[in-house]
Length: 574
Image 1: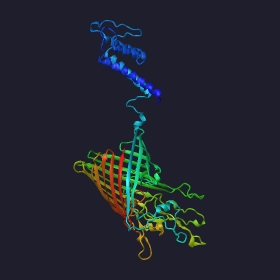
Image 2: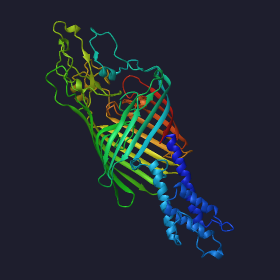
Image 3: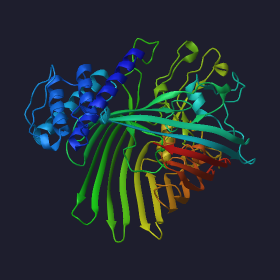
Image 4: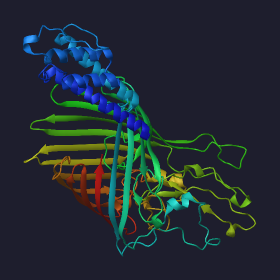
């Protein structure tokens, strides 16, 4: 707004205030006549407002007549009021007419305010009322503590897959593969997470959402950003983008990139994990006894093979896509004195994610790909049994010195049977107890099929052969995962002073589930881990709480790998 516009608006505001004040005084009978029959102060004020244009002539005349009538001596009530040039004589105005005049003045003032954009009390644009802004911020101090007894040969297979492979021929490559840290502590790392999203009510049945989030990289399981880096700016990623349609009560169809549609713990899916594709969710109460049923069907594309693979060949590979198809059904039951019980069973079919051993590929002759390169995982943490993917042909002129750059893939297939159970009960003084259990079994786990698929090229979770000949019996893995946790205190932190404590235990065998998608904090992510964890939270201000967490975990099978993680963080949500 310019200075001239502001001064104009201020003058209008002052004038309008005087007019409104005059009307209110008249309506309340506060105008008093001067002795001797002269013009009262109120009459002069009304004339002044008429001369300035703040009051329309007909409105001013009506107010003037009322003021003159009330100012006249009681004995001369019937005497005619002397007219002045420009005055309009109006007979006595009933109360209903005066009320109508007051409303007209008010409407005129508000219309002028809106036109000049200097006042519109209680009103915002309509579209803003259909938007809801959501977000959270977390500041964390984290320490990672490693046992000195850990193996110092922990290969970083994800880096190998992200690069040009690792040459396994000792005659042509004397370098070690990229290795993860396994013995040196990392203390007091400062890390942050920030997420900001908008949900829009598009219509009676349709919504849309968009959310941005921080993150060190585009990995799916964490939106945490490590600080430092020379004080450089931090990255922001598109975390969610979805549309939702609810044609019936209890039915929601969602598509795009959205939050986890299944009821689960971070044993299977990280709390930061979002899903691509489509999810259909339905919930329906049964009778009036506190029982309701729910179901979720999800169709999630994990990876699409490149349209142009192989890039250096005229013959392109057919489309090979990786999917997660999930179905979960469950029930909620509220009974007794605020008792709550929730149970669900789910089936998750990870299709086409196992590795394949390629057709012979003559890399020595200039080829830059093998037929199964597409089967290496786009993202992995650690723990799953891995296999070599490439069947590399040797150079007949120099077979011993043929480079053999290898990628790795998952040796096992994954079809998960998932069982979740949670029970809540109130205790005393607003305190409660929640007990949770989560069990997962990989129905597709089969060491014989894994050995056959890899054609002997297993590179992790493999023990030294007892009789000198390796085989599927030497695979040290497993197909079960489970978690148990108890939480005591205010189960949902709502106000300053609320607190809770949690204690839990996890065991995840190597091939119980894909290591790419679960919690990245316990044992620093992945499978082949077991151990306990404990933590607590305290809300010290509205929507702001402090959380401390200690996680102690080690390997289930294989070389020693003990990792303890301590986190102290402040969270804020809005």
